[in-house]
Image (cartoon, rainbow, N blue to C red; front, side, top):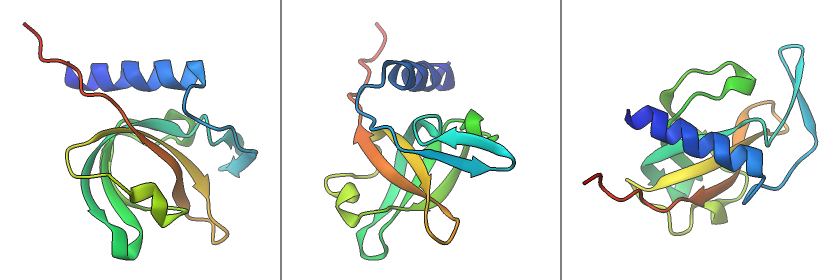
Amino acid sequence: MKSKWWLAIALMAASSGLGFAAQGPMETGGRTVSSRDAATAAKVVSVDAEHKTVRLAHEPVKALGWSAMTMDFKVADGALLNGLKAGDAVMFELGKAADGVWQITRITRQEAKPAAP
């Protein structure tokens, strides 16, 4: 049930375009995807500002063929990590760095969903 809630948020945010800047298309595995397509919801597991990385437990990234998993990501700009902490619900976008590695180009905290009655 919890993962369906995250997926619903990801789909609503991606389809509305709110909070996510469009970047140019990227080539991946013979497919072209935009950073907006390579966006999903996640929960912050840990933040390492010194190394400009964040560990996220993220929902599937369908445009890239990734299943839901927990992984570390570099961020394009260390300032993206300002204010993030373990437990935060976020939406994030991925883009390819010059070395070809996927990195976070945008990340925004989401309001916590109130507990069900």
